[in-house]
Amino acid sequence: MSKSKVLIGAAFVLGGLLGLVPLFALDKSRISSRALLNPQGASEAIAAPASADSSLIGTYGANQVQRAQLNGGEAQKLYEAEMQVYSAAEQILVQRYVTEFFEKMKTEKKFGSVEDAQAAYFSERVTVATAEVDKFLEENKDNPALQRIPQDQRAGQVRSYLEGRAREGAFRQLVDQAKNSGAIRVALRRPAEPKLEVDDGGNFFLGPKDAKVTIVEFADFQCPFCARMIPTLDTIMKEYKGKVRWVYRDFPLREIHPEALPAAIAANCAGAQGKYFEMHHALFSNHQRLGSALYKELAGKIGLDGGKFDSCLKDPKMEAEVLKDSLEGQNLGINGTPAYFVNGRKLGGAVDKAEFARLIEGELAKK
Image (cartoon, rainbow, N blue to C red; front, side, top):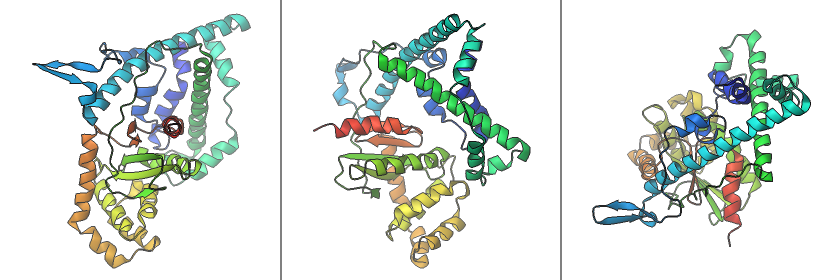
């Protein structure tokens, strides 16, 4: 890897190094699907796709398979493969554009090297005030991983992380400007997200039942990336008040998260007393210390009837309801959390608000 690529990708590298603090970690699935800095790695495993315009997938024996005949999981799998090709093409164009951009900057401003040009570009756009560092430390003072870092090193590591995040933002702004101006344009047709039939499963939701847009979330209460998405979803519900419904469905990853299933049952039992999302938010706020003692503690804090809650936790119907969600999620091709469907169009991983807005605005614009 060249020095120029190392510097351009510094935001991603810093985020990864500081991943020992869970809040710092960048979602691996998000980086692998959306990172713009490593086209070689993104394209190595990609096979040549069939035309995205073709309705015929292929044949087996005497049978033809059309796109319209694919089930939800199959349609999503094909879309993701085709999207990999589109993203790889975009990444190649971005890398070439950025290389040319800094070569030109070096020549025009008479820098000694491309690396010097890059350093100057980012230094003008990346500033982290001491107050920002102090605020981050205060907001995350109870984070166990942060507490394991020696006191005299915490501020320095947080500053490096915040600078890396700002550098990532500056880089993305550079790329977005190039796309918006037409300086970067992918000739391949962008695959359309398949619209799947995603039922709400009769689960608890926020927002009006007849909202024009429904977000169905499949998540796990012990999943740190799911917990990090709560503020984003809360913001969406405020900004699109009355227009969006948010449905929560359970997808406990029991192999790696032993408390995911009991926590889901606890949430449903709170729901039986009309306090589902109070428990939902409380569980995610405490996702690092899930356990029976916490469930009882939270039940008291949100005003549940303790006897009814304890009895509900033992009801096998509650576990069956959670596992039903999980099975339906598997049938939709979900294999990790969080996963979202916006009117049947899938978003996976810890996606940002802009990704939700892209699909929400598209749905709201339809008659």
